[in-house]
Length: 351
Image (cartoon, rainbow, N blue to C red):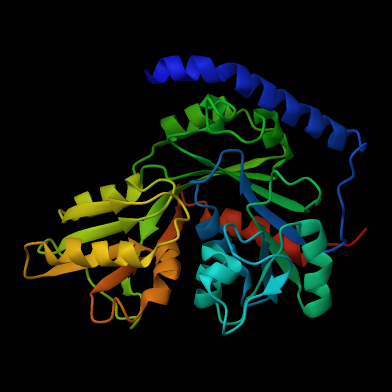
């Protein structure tokens, strides 16, 4: 049945792909213009729709740079209820700025987190409001060619490499594969920690990067869960039974992690960026109460936690923990990646 649907949708993928290809050609030939800001901009993105680890990569680069530079992030604030340019403050919520910007705002005290639907307009407003800013990280902006970033970091998931994918709606690509040539760095994410040199070379051959492009490989590194209201750290043990709340694009790695810990769990699956309702909270409480274990917990992602935070009263007293996710570089290449990013910022020279 799935194959039949794919065949039926394929003509639409061809049309969509042709439109995107024409659009890119117009930018390449400068018929459509990309704005340059003579300012160090690092763009994090992918060719596919969701699920490659963009926000954890943005957080990785924030940690890398925050001790030496004044940093800001700018994203569109997907699914926020507001419009226009906003800078996060102590009163901001996920509804105001989006769940991913809210996640970063909560984590990094000295970070300026801004949102705007049109980054080409958001950048000058951000620099006007925060003139001390030394570098801006554009989260999920690779396909938005209105802005010409000096450093483009393109992510592709190990199990869903863009080379094996198709354009929407048959596949998951929202940009054509040839756009990968615009990246300075390509990161293959969510690899198995046991990935070997032979597998690495096979992927490099398939990606066929330009001589000027650096390719890195990362695996997922989960930290100990943190209570979403009290910040208490929880050590996962085999005795735990968990209710897993997941509203992300790809929960499979998270499920695998729980299986590796031999944790029995039930999952409540929601769509990506899902806005929880009071009825959902009631159902979570109900499902949790039915778990038969003396040592049971609720687990969720950091992104979901930002959208559950408004129900602090309803979830008061519940053992609900968010699991932090980070990128871990393979083959000892973390130092090389870090050097590429730091060198770009330190040696940036305006035109």
